[in-house]
Image 1 (cartoon, rainbow, N blue to C red):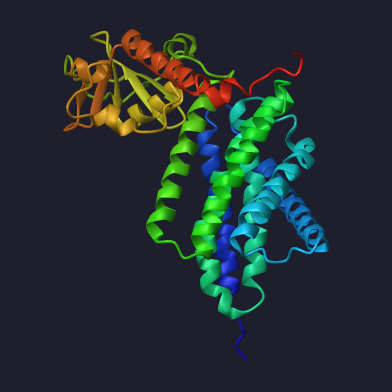
Image 2: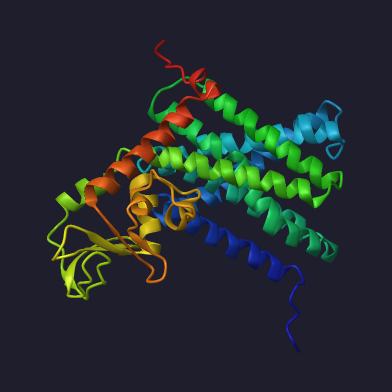
Amino acid sequence: MPMHIPPTLPLIVISFLLGYLLLRFFQRYDLYEKEPLPVMGAVTLFGGLASIGIALALYRLVKLFGFVDFTSDAGLIFFVAPIEEMAKLTALFITYPIFKKEMNEPTDGVVYMSSVTLGFSLIENLFYALPAPETRMLIVLRVFTSTPAHILFSMFMGLGFYLTRKKRLSYRFLLLTYLYAIVAHALYNLSLFNGWPIFYVLVLFYLSFRAFNWLLEYTTAKSPFHISLKNYVRNALPPPLEKGLECLNCGDRSPKPTYRIGKIMFQKCVHCPYFITPLPSLAQIFHHFGSKFHNVSAMVYASPPSLENPLIQHHWISTQKKLAIFDLEALDAYLEAIQRQIIQRFESKSWFRKNIVSSEQ
């Protein structure tokens, strides 16, 4: 007799597979000291269970006071979004002992907040998937929209959590990030339950993902583990000789000293002052040493040339050969300027300055 497979089982498997892929995706943004996947998995599991339990308890408490219409506009705005975001944030505090020793830079707060949120969304998907086959289309939509949406809406709370726990700042900024999560979550719920045109949902996702990149650029730039490109080259072990890339300045193809860090690879030309790197690796250099995630391709392939980018200004890029050369001092100065600009742009916002208040004041 053939085995009967519940129609929702493949969707549940897909949901958990997506969860694993998202955990690996978070690790990509944790450039300098990646969080251990087992710790992230534990926070996802226990944080998800804790947040779901807290949310269910809060829903039951609200029902005791007579409110039951959670799908109305008022319910979505004043109860669903605040309850679920509070549940996720509380679960982050509950699971803090699991990752306390690992949280040593601002990006870690975002990573572990995202892990808790992922666990919440995956378990919530199970609640939608198990009751009846009619929910299959709903679970498909939730897997590919609600799971990323939950993460994008809650991510700022991760920075607020880090600042309160590690920098001993007041809870004012954390409260502000909680309010941001509520507003974004409520807008998403309203768009789904009221059948808003898909255009509005796409705009919300676009703006949220822009904010996601903006936040991670800032947390990466503030990492205590950041090292400049110039200092990395100076402090690196003697690089091995490997098959040489063509130098765009002198044409040399001989074996060259080769530097590698993650996906980054660049070589020092032995006949002229320049370094050579493939264009994909150049983009990774902007990520790692300039803390720049958004719009890097415009810096690498910009047309017309950007006068402030030394690689383009001095015609050091060949899109035909997919190679670039750079002067170490010039590129290092440019990357450090980008990083300072990222920090200044974030910290100059009034909503940030007004709410970062030391608890000692």
